[in-house]
Length: 292
Image (cartoon, rainbow, N blue to C red; front, side, top):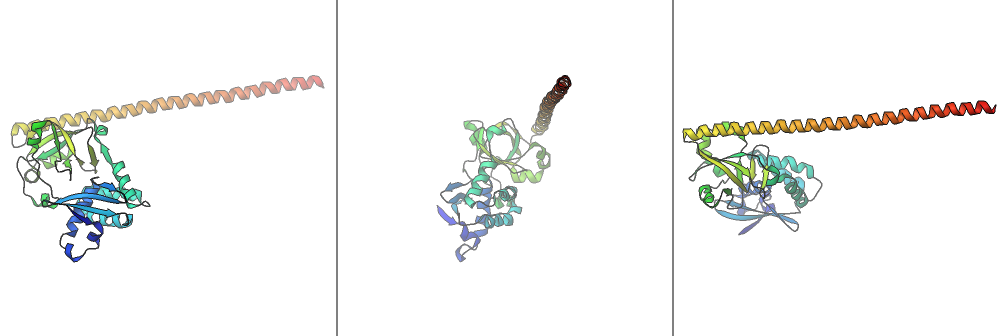
């Protein structure tokens, strides 16, 4: 596998002038999704462009400022890069390796923390040719074949991960353009407990998902079933939201009651102290009166 120094991408030599920006963009995208490893004082990530797999190495000699500048230049092309740029601002002042390791540990979420959450994954039964997919080097995965061995779909190349969208995005994607780009089939999925996921504010990107159901949107009955499932999911999410709000309100009520009890106890103590000093003052006054 060819290894490329990231510095050769941002300070290009003549040999890499034609493809360097594409390698840089894909490598930064991989890093934004947490797909990298720490090797001593450097970061390594693997990319695949047109079937050619490469390893990109970022040495710790590159400053965090330089790295963030490269992410900023590239970020308008991909939400996860926007997310990376926003988050890495919190880690400036550290070495590049430390910064990226913290980003990965704090923003890559384990599936067990997302238990019960439901997402929607569009897919196609056949390979799709689309300019936007080519831009992101989105490969086609034969999910139906994977499901023959169980109910989990996964990124078999262990590279870019699998995208899924929140329920409220689905109505915007039920159209010819999206079907041609992503496919006219959908999975209703949930994160797997031992999987790892990035929530970039728009979508979820993970290495594998449990498939709860699958639907063919070219069939009118399945389209109706999707609408029903979306309503059920939204209803469950709303119920969960109000249950959480009620639980928080209940906890706040208990905290207020405890605070009031502490305040009452403090006032009683203060009152008793004042009464004690008043009584002592009277007794002392009587004693002094008898002495004189």
